Image 1 (cartoon, rainbow, N blue to C red):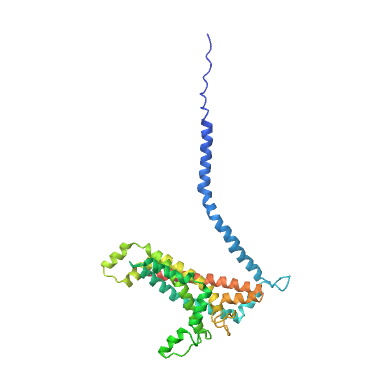
Image 2 (image 1 turned 90 degrees about the vertical axis):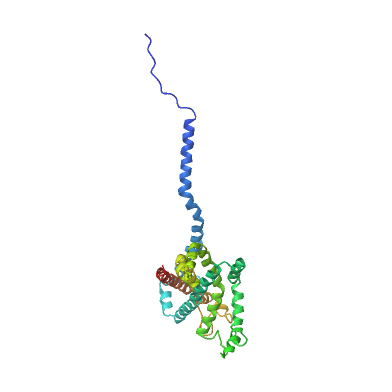
Length: 323
């Protein structure tokens, strides 16, 4: 009797291994795309930030630890000597006071006015696009042109500001000679340039507030000011915090306005009455004292972090009480 051959397993179709490999390849490509592509998209920012942000910051810290000038080939390591000299320097503390004073005088009224302007533009108005573009024009104007024009307006003998003050019996004010007057004049320049810009940021945030809230408040008889206080401001808290911090950083870095106010002076006036920290850094760079200028830069960086952090905490607490 003939024996039967054992059954053999059916052979796999010839295309199945190829399809399996293709499926595995597509799965790996999908995993790579979903997990690695986000890092690839943000990598250019971090590369540029490392090259133009972190590296200059670290290199400035290294320079601040040396007696670094272009007049000598060797740069002696002095450790924290530049910082010890800086803390005993009256010019540094005078510049820090001027920076803080100008920052407060320019930032607080600027932000209040920006919120008010944004609230007005958030209503149905004619020529809204034209009004918004008008708000942005001061920001795109050359800062040199702004300072030159405002220096003429604040002129002691023929300035328009003193001419208007004479109507109320106020004599000619030498705006660039006093501490308070120069700080007020420079603050007006900063406010003129940045109020409209910040107003547009607030307006963009206000556009996202649901209109139903305003309609309900109007039916309840709430005035426009009440709606601003009770609805708008609490709803745009994150934007307010952001604008406060960025405005604080900008105020700490003021340079062109005090440099060109009245006349070109790196000392910020004859008596350094409006010299800011940025201007003090620039003065030491013109003297080729890079080590000391770098130490001032790092102290200014620490001041910015401190002031921005305090502003953040105060803003969060103050706006949190409105909810």
